[in-house]
Image (cartoon, rainbow, N blue to C red; front, top):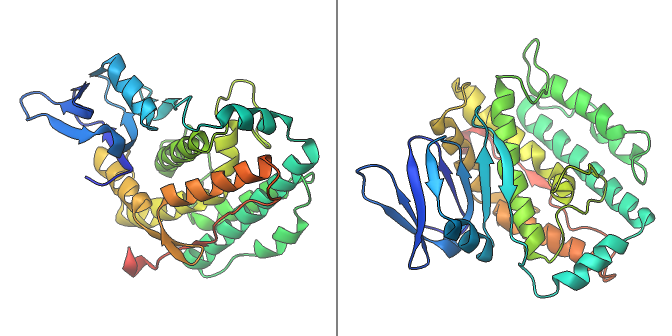
Length: 304
C-alpha cells in the first residue's frame, strides 16, 4: 500500500476502527484489512451502513488525513480536515487573514489565467483546438472584474462535451455525477495540503461564502479542475460508463492519483497541491508575490 492512498468505501457495510496505528476495515466475514494510518490521505464513506470510532477520525486527522462523508446520492457532502498540521500555523493564520485586497486580487488573476490555460490545453488534447480560449487569458485583469472566467467556462463546456443538452449542473444525473465526485476528491487533496502548509482552508482569496469552510481550497483547485474533466471523459464517458458506480469511481480515482506530467516533471496531485500551497504560504509571509501553479499536460488516449 503506497502513501497518499484514497480509500472509497461504497460497496458494502463496513466498520472502521484503529489498531496498532493502523486503520482497520472490517466487512462482514471477510478478513479485516489493516492500513498504516500514515499511508492514508483520504477516506471517502458513501455506503449508508458504515460505522467508525472516534479514534478513527482523531488518528486520521492527527496523521494529516481527510475524512469525507456522502449523502443519499453517494456524493460528497462533508469533509473533516486536520486543525493542527504545521508548527507555525498560528503565525500564518494571522498573516493570511491580514493579506490585503490588492494582493488577493493579483493572486486570483493568476489563478484564473492558469485555469483558462488548463481548459485550453484540455480542449486542444481532446478536440484538437482551444476554440479561442488562449486569446482570453490576457483579458483577465486583477481580480477578474469583467468575469472572463465565466466567458471562458461557457465556451469550454460547450466544446468539451460534444453532446446536445449537456450543461454543467451539480444535480444532473449524467457526466456531472463523476465531475462532482472528481472535484470532491481534488478538493480534499488541496484542503489537506493547505492545512499541512499552516494555512486556514476557510480564508479564501476570492471565494468567501460564509457557509463554506473550504473557500481557499475552492480557490486553489481551479487550475486543476480540467484534469478531472479530462479523465472523466477519457476513462469513463469514452467507455460508456455513465452511472455513478464503485467501479467508475475507482477508475477515476486511479487515473487522478497516478503520476502526471505536470510542469515538465512527473508528479502526483499530492505533490502539486503541496507545491502550490507552500508557494501561497510564502506569498502570505512576504517571501514572494506569485503562486507556483502547474502547467497541465494531458496524455494521449492511447497512453491512458
